[in-house]
Length: 247
Image (cartoon, rainbow, N blue to C red; front, side):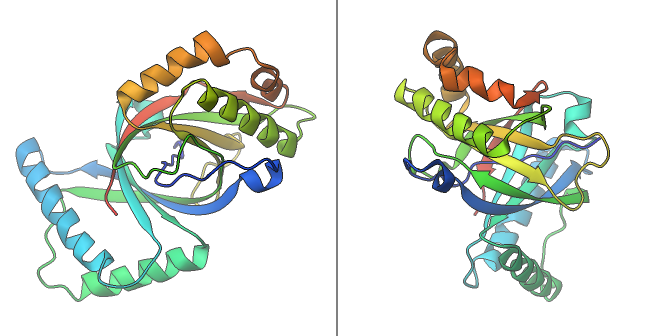
């Protein structure tokens, strides 16, 4: 079963009203595998492909952001058979659709579009609720942990989000850096007994991720909000990925 992921490419300021703490966001994911055996050649081809793609993606007005993520702490199940993935974020599904149609047209008309060293066979989409973060910086590189979660019996999703936001602000006040999101799978996501949602927690690099973990166990763990959120959800082992913002 493929795990759905997302990254932090933008952050939002705090608010005292928990209902307005969360900002809506939409995402599309492409799961890819390297098909060129020589790593040096593949890296050179990857850079050329991204450069050509960016030329088209920035040639017209849009509010779309794109990043590539690579595995750090994962296993075969978490990777779902792929080597890495791209995630595209937009303010609405229509904005994502318009961007995709325009890019298909531009790349299809480009006779000099470089050959990609990878294939992307599977795609999915998701709706997200972007929670409060430590700042409003857009990081060019970042580490992200993803927890697949299910609602417990009698869970109150709104109360869960309120508790998570309260805990997150406590964590940031203790010195943690980054942000988090709730991720709700859409078309192309897992069926049947898959997770109800994911929580992703991003940090500006592996050192910051490690520091966030230390702060959690030394200062943030055990507060009423931190403990209370587990009355509404259960989460499985996370995976960790490293991301690069392309656009």
